[in-house]
Image 1 (cartoon, rainbow, N blue to C red):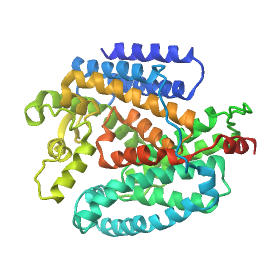
Image 2 (cartoon, one colour):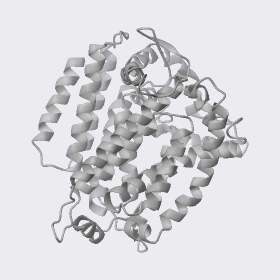
Image 3 (tube, rainbow, N blue to C red):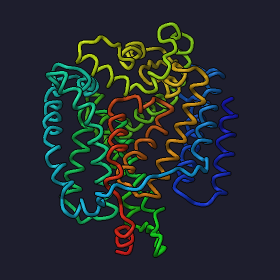
Image 4 (cartoon, rainbow, N blue to C red):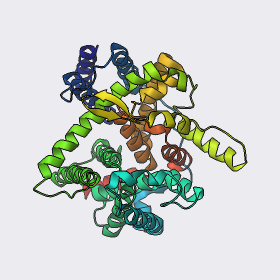
Length: 442
């Protein structure tokens, strides 16, 4: 079955290469290259992990197939017109509205980042303190603090990343805005010392980068130009993300990254990446055999866990006892399991874990198709309407597309807040075609 998945990805890559160049085609090629790489690593299994069952590989095959159908459908969506009071991102950047907002919002982020670093300075490595952001106690003194940070912090983080990369590609003279948005990114990422945030940053940058490349002005026919300096910027961003990833790995090992231990930290990081991305298949296998009674069928509450959590917090504030699904299954998967090769594993059970424990195999087929269709919709809306906040939405969806081999990011409440914000306010900020053509000619 693993070889069938490899063959399936190769066929889709070949078909896409024969199609006309477009944003969506490029995303589809990246998707199939990613799964080709992941499945190949899983089959080669250099880390001695347990074998993956044909059942799990079959579910992966169904996901790839149905997601690709949803993504590639040539559906004519009905994109409604922009709001009358719509402003362009160029206008907001020029009048420093975004700069002022980020300058204010960076203050609480900096406060919690400093508190987190002071707290973890006495811990045995950053790994011990990374869960502080998900509990009330040392970092957050009240539930309100914790919910506000975790519910809206991700929105601020992604917005700052989109603004930063937009300015770097379109208006690099906005040094203050670039600096403060970069500060928001780094401070937020430092709280918890997680490493998935660095990958999310790369997905946001890739979205802005591809948007610039594939956007053209309808009247002048000017195509977005990617110069050597943009390629250099892409390389710098990628290297920066790699450095931060290695630095975080070293911090968790209670050491510092240096030239003397660079190769050792790199080898450890590569091993962890292999185990994270392919160990999740073994964890899903374990879940299929052992968690059916504990978790059961949940009819959408796991896939839409962010909405379920918001509902649970609201009902809890009213004094109504509501078992939040994210917490219920989280207690189960936080326990470490053996996946072979001397490795233990927890939390990452693939995104298919959520689909399956909601509606079984039907859930995998339907939700994978709808997820592909969702990306299809927002890429189309971004390219046609040029809504700036759609850059955020597409970046988040691309991050989830790659993270599917490990987890379902969209079950988090932070991701749901981003989605709601885009749907409510996405049409109020656009990247105007006129501004686009002027920037491209500059």
